[in-house]
Length: 339
Image (cartoon, rainbow, N blue to C red; front, side):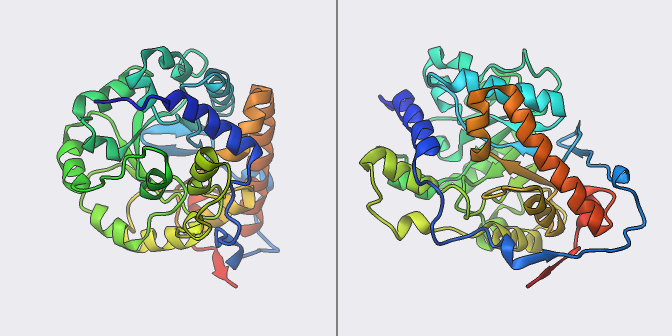
């Protein structure tokens, strides 16, 4: 397996661009604004009756929330990941690590992914690109990614548009479905399949439906465009304004995947910015929501800033469920209408 010579530099530039650059979609939105929660003037409950706790991948959580995949393997990676992990542990939510490829291929990068010391009970999810199965990765590398960080599960991300616009990106996505089908039954931990912010729609959901994965993160368009990130990292400007706006909006991806996969766990991410966004996602059929980029700057400030951001988000989610008359996240399902 060859390693990308500048992978750590690229990780650093990803962070810089996400902090300072225009990385959000400019025309596509999440589509959540096209939905309205069903308000109940008489909820017949108290706000304190709302119980956000849930179980996901066999672990209890105090809210249906994941800190989304962000970073690792560069100078600020350890600081960011530890702040995020400390906040996750304090609030009882889950956390997904950034792509661990750099960790597997450059041992000196491993320390930036090690967060179990500060988050011993947190639901921790590792992360690798599915396309790496076409670059020599197999069962051993997937198990190593989980074992070396003490993760509870592994996310495999699908990102053809990002790879196509990345300098030296891995663009051979042929045969991955068969390789995934062969690997999944052999893995001793749950696997999440996810996009990175350009969405999973009906066609892909149908092809993934027969496989024994544990959850699907629709990771829709409307938040951060990783196509934009790659163009800004590589060129310093947007060369392909149409390509960087491609994707399936988060709400649309969620509705399509729920129709195809009515009984499978779904995660909504991609432009989820408020507790009300989260409530809409739950009402549309998600079991969990995930947020990444809005937590990046607080993570650089420290765990207290991350906790403050999350507490405000979860407080808004609690109020949204209260005025919908939903005592639990599961009761939010269907309490939404298109406008």
